[in-house]
Each structure stands twice: as C-alpha cells, then as structure tokens.
Amino acid sequence: MHRGMTEAVKSLKGQLLLDNGKLRGSFFHRTVVLVCQHDAEGAFGLVLNRSTNNKVADALSADLPETFKEEPLYLGGPVQPQALSYLHSDNYLPDANVIPSLNVGHSLETLIELAASFSSTQRIRVFAGYAGWSPGQLDDEMKRDTWLVHPASIDLIFDHSPEKLWQSILGNKGWKYRLLGEAPEDLSWN
Image (cartoon, rainbow, N blue to C red; front, side, top):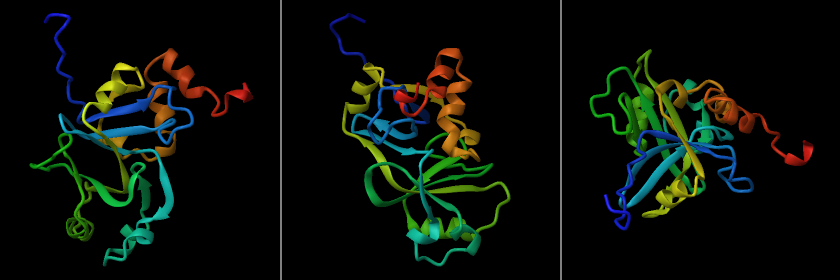
C-alpha cells in the first residue's frame, strides 16, 4: 500500500476499549466499552463498568420476574440515557450479533421474553444510554492512542465486579498497564 493512500480501518466490533489514561475529566475516564457495532456509519458501544446505582425495576415498569427487576441497571454511555439496550448471552445463540454467544438488543418486548424464559446458562445485563461515535470519530481516537484494545469475552462482559474491570484487565496486560490501573484516581494524592 502506498503511503499516500488511506488505510481501511479494521472494525473494532466485539472488542473492548479501555481508557488509556488520556480521558481524565471525561465521561469515559477509566471505562471499559464493548464495541457492539463499528462500520463506515460510525460506532455503537456499551460501557460495562458503570452502574446507575439503580435496579432494572427503577427504569422499566414492564411485567418482569421479581429477581430480574432486582438486577443492577448499568450506564451504557452518555448518549440518550433514556434509551434501553441489553446484552444477552447463552450457550447457544445462532444469531449472535456481537461475538459468538452474545447479542445486543434494544427491544423491550424481546427483553421481557428473555427475562421470563429460564435458562441456567443465560446471562442478561440491561443498560441505560450508550456510547456512540460518528463516522470516522472512533478511528481518529484510535490513531490518537486514546483507547487500548482488548479482546472481549463473555466472562469479562458479565464480570461479577464490573467496578474493578478496568483495573483488572490492565493488571493482566503487563507491568506498564498495571501501573496505569493502580494509579490513584486523583494524581495529587501521589
């Protein structure tokens, strides 16, 4: 490829984006974002490690099982905080649309059906809002080294301690990243 030609940007769909320490003061400081869609029209993702401190029942008045109503509601991003999204995983999802065995959805009707169905291997997380990038915006952020990319997995997406997910992933990436993850929230404490 000639240097003057623009390089096609590889889709980041199905990858995790981690704040590379350059997002202090922004909504995305110390976040882990699952990229659910990334193409020429832009990108859509969900922040995995921000709770709204509310339960699903606080956001949805739908007829849902009581145990599901008590699940935490996550803050998927700063765009349209009233918009509902969910991640759904099960051992066999032939129409998985993010990574194998993982769907992202937005339909309340489908969410109600999923919550009412029983599967011991099913996992669901509900999000208010999302992270969105206009065409080329995420690609530009990647060129500026704003984000670290890490492969997504079902275990990371449904981690039992999402508030520690950013630090946990960085800690497993090597000493340089571990230092970033262990840095105090406020550098003046150093």
